Image 1 (cartoon, rainbow, N blue to C red):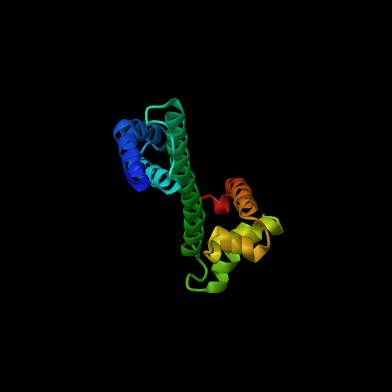
Image 2: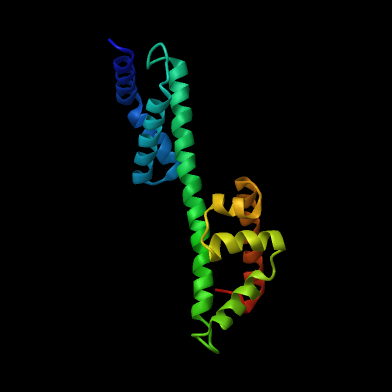
Length: 177
């Protein structure tokens, strides 16, 4: 039996043994059947890609490794969902504000003014991140490159900017949507 055949056999054994357990772990994190299934698939793809080697699929080390891989795959999906939801929230609020313009509904300068007012409560570093991510619809990586900061800094600044905007929107009745 070749090394590739052994690897395939090992992955098949792991699938038979752990597929349902992996699904339950992913579902406990995601609370969504389809995404839990996606997490299991992602985990097995990672197992195949990294060509893990254990004495047997039933070993404790193998079980721990597989649980770690599925937990990380599910958490990655959870975090992606959270980021997508947050960007959608800000984008939707900007679109709502633009549609609620009462003076000149077709005027770009009026909607720009409303956006500027809403984002005026942000410091420059937060403003730049929100502007790149939401207004210019750039990715986290593109924003990091544009601003000369790390992707982790972009995510953290965006998180903080959302908190500032929520407080500002709740405090100002004209922006309470």
